[in-house]
Image (cartoon, rainbow, N blue to C red; front, side, top):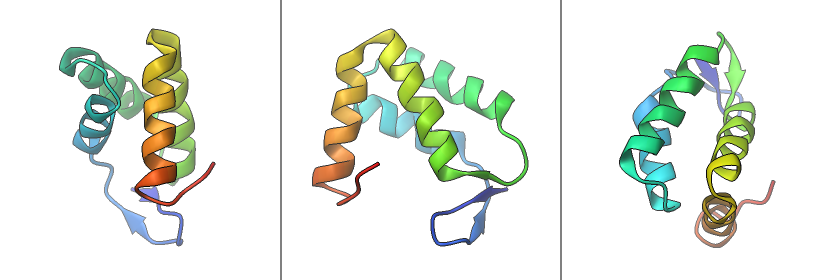
Length: 82
């Protein structure tokens, strides 16, 4: 279970990371690898913010443009920052 921004608990769904990473420009195989890595390191009660931070670091290490694309999407579409 992970902790959402509003405090709710939700099951960890790696596919959400895969979809978001692909939307950021990562190829499907890289997106799946990132999701699998996060799934292995995720602990009970991890926050969505912690997951996002880890995913962004992984995207940046592969291609800084993918990290930028994720952040632009979060800001423009989801109206989030940070």
